Amino acid sequence: MKKLETEILNFIDRYKLISDGEKILLGLSGGPDSVFALNFFIKYKNRLKIELASIHFNHMLRGEESDNDEKFVKELCKSNDIELHVMNLDVKKYSRENNYSIEEAARYLRYHEFNSMMKKTGCSKIVTAHNCNDNTETILLNSIKGTGLSGYSGIPVKRDNVIRPFLSVTKNEIIEYLDNNNFKYCKDSSNYSEDFQRNYLRINIIPEIENNLNPSLHKCVLNTSLNLQSAMKYLNGLIEKILLQSLITGENFVDLDLNHAEMDNEYLLGEVLKNICSNHLKIEFNRKLFVQVLELKNGQVGKQFDLENNWQAIKERGSIRFCHTSKVSEDQEMILRAGEMVEMNGVRIGCENLESDFEAEMQDDESEIISADKLDDIFILRKWKSGDYFQPLGMKGTKKISDFLTEQKVPSSDRNNYLVLTNNETIVWVVGLRISDKFKLTDKTKKAIKLWIK
Image (cartoon, rainbow, N blue to C red):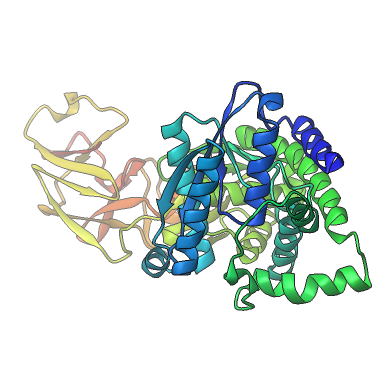
């Protein structure tokens, strides 16, 4: 027993899980793991120089059995003078309303209340009593479902303010310790139901592996996961550095610079994409998306594909741009008359008559003055279409809009959003870029119109 306690203390010291003077909040279910954890902290409270509080969650899933667990925990904490907080969680209701499994719903609600209570009680750390067996089960489940390095690294020893000081201890060691010290604990009947995937592994698969392949399975798996967690810590630091150097973000776009050697590494690229999807695009990252981006990375400028929630990935020169596509449809049109202003695609466009002395009218980068001698009173504003052409100012011949935008070095991701202003089905203005030579001011112009954007 002393050896086991020393192992835990060394584990806490090795990973710097607890500092002197901290107040920690322990999740106390009443089961063997959490009762073991409570008694350990009671015994080593002075050695660790900590304050101890506990929280019990009644998931209201097992009727009388759940109520008995709550009663047991209250008596246990009272007899040991331990601060206790009890929370009732309506897991079934939350599961039903949010389309979560019972396990997912319970976990979400627990950690939500954990964090809330941590702040209320002045605690600096949350302690869960996960053990070595839990870690093995988690890794096996992740492996069966498909996972990356983080999934194979198992349950984190520390994540934010959540610490798990008992990961190095097996379930058998915990039960033996409790029985030898005559410590009572509760048994959760749901742990024996094979309806849950984790229970099925625990009851049927893992014992076969231990009996026939490796009796030290849990410790071996833990050592591997701890090594991977150490490697992941380094890799996460590298990924954060790559993100700082490679991402440019705006209101409706994210640019990923490909001119970094790390972008040639598929693992690092995948982790960067996962971060972009989660933190910027708010969409799910999956293998299909990764393969599409990989093909885009090696593809021609202008190649693109659609993502969820109106996001689009487009290959630019030396980068990939993720942009939120315009809500303006290809066939949407707006009428614009002199003296009016309309808004389309987030741009305000105005049109006003100039009665006299229009040659002296000030122009800037956001306005154009055109001859209106051959124009009707009604203009049509729309997105440019494939096959559109016009005669750019200063040119004798016509040019396709697509070629003109390319020559103007307009990024591929922005080209589809450009608007044109037409009159009598003739393009007068590629908005914000160039007017048609057909409508330039001349010394014979009698009527002029000022066009502007904001």
